[in-house]
Image (cartoon, rainbow, N blue to C red; front, side):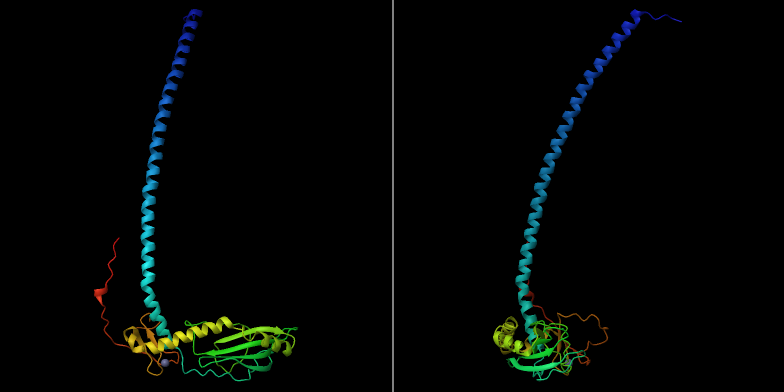
Length: 285
Ligand SMILES: [Zn+2]
């Protein structure tokens, strides 16, 4: 076995130290290079990200502007169709509907007691509203001031206020308006309240009715249903009820006509629809 000398140990130690410092030096150089490469790509990625955000942002803004513009245009042009749909609804109002309201409201199914009729609040040719005092089921304030109204106008032209829980039997007649106005402990109190508030009770509904009535009369003097014949898809031979091309026929078998509310079948309107293609819109992107 060869003997190791101290000189040998020193030599090896020196060599190892040199290797070690060379390792550290080169590692630092390489680490710096890695850092530079990393930074370079980070900067590039950052620039690309910014560029991407700008490009995508511009494209998105352009698309959203376009969509908004088109939507505004659609709404603007659609207003005519909306108007015609409302005109057609005017022709659908049940003008033959009897509006007279009897003075006595029958007892409901429960413990309601008819007390007194205070007469008409509104007595117009297309809307009648009568005011009643009826009993309710509350232990205190056991009387309610109630408004009952009947109009030839229905939804969607107008929606009259409808309270619930009044449980008033009105001879099977569907009321347009049924509303509890106030509860009190005595009829005198309710009468006083009614006298004081006669002009503001139901004011928004009555104002809306007046506006709808004006619109209705204007429509009736301007148009005939035949003006819109091409938009009528079905007609009831019994009453003048109809369905328009705006209402879908779904829910009916194709070989079966839809029915009017009184269960008689509608008659299909045969017609050829000719579209005016000269007015076609051109849309540029
Ligand atoms: Zn009918």
